Length: 194
Image 1 (cartoon, one colour):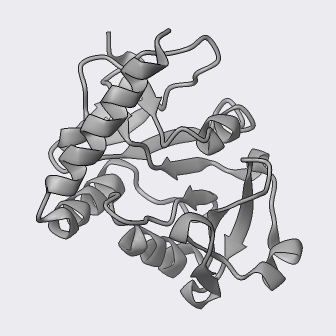
Image 2 (cartoon, one colour; image 1 turned 180 degrees about the vertical axis):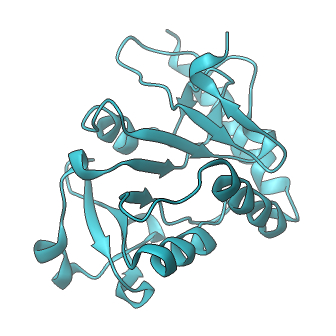
Image 3 (tube, rainbow, N blue to C red; image 1 turned 30 degrees about the vertical axis):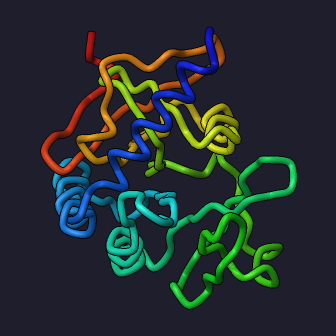
């Protein structure tokens, strides 16, 4: 597979996303659609990424899960391009971290780091997607590695703006697609798409 093709798609998707002047409103619509499509269950463990720059904003989702459940799992970057998973109980436990992303306060991590196998629903970002759930990230592979550590029944949901959906995303043999894509105008069940 030609990595320049992935890089071209990545550049296009980032440019499209940066051109949006109403990302906050679109993010609110995505948040509403997420909870309409996937009603929250009291005993489920959700992991939600903490948005940065022009990504779909997740602060509303984090607040909602904290309100309903009292806790939500958030990722943080480890030195080896892996993600640590932290059980967050208050948004005040976040501080600016790697790549400018809000991450859990370092001193709290050891006592509240959890295993990927405990996640029931993963809400993840990406740069570009196709309707089959194939994705391109920023190129470091953090979420690619995490996807391989989750239980097979973990629901994998990606959030994106419509402008981030492409006809076809090139894949490699070890790439894992997401199950669902939520945009401001549609909910795509990727596992049933042809």
